[in-house]
Length: 125
Image 1: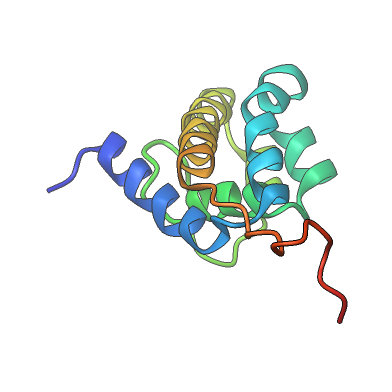
Image 2: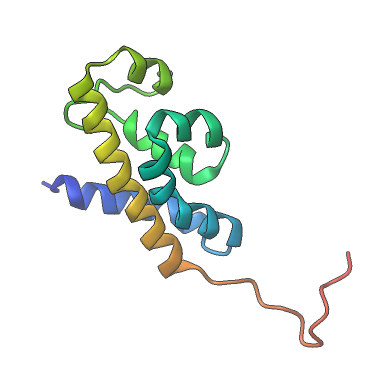
C-alpha cells in the first residue's frame, strides 16, 4: 500500500508526463505553489482554473483519496470548498500545496523542449 506522499508523486507523474514538452505547462506549474500561498486555494481555482496544472490539482482534490476532504469525481470543487468546515478547507489547502509542489518538480524534471530545426529557424507549415 502506498503512503499519501507516494500517491501524490505517482498521480503528479501520471498527469505531467503527457506534457513533458510543454513549456507552458512547466511555467504554469512552476508558479502554482506560490500562487496558492499568496492567493489561496479558492482564488486560484476560480481565477486560473483553465490552466492544466490547476485542473490536475483539482482532479487530485476530487479524487476521493485526500483525507479530511469530501471528494468525488465530477463534483464542483469550489462549491465543496465553500461548504466545508474551516478544518477541511485548511486540509485541502495544505494538500493542494503539496500536490502543486509535486507537479512543479515533475514538470521541471521531465521538461524536454522540442528540438529546433537545424538552421535555427522555426518550421514553416
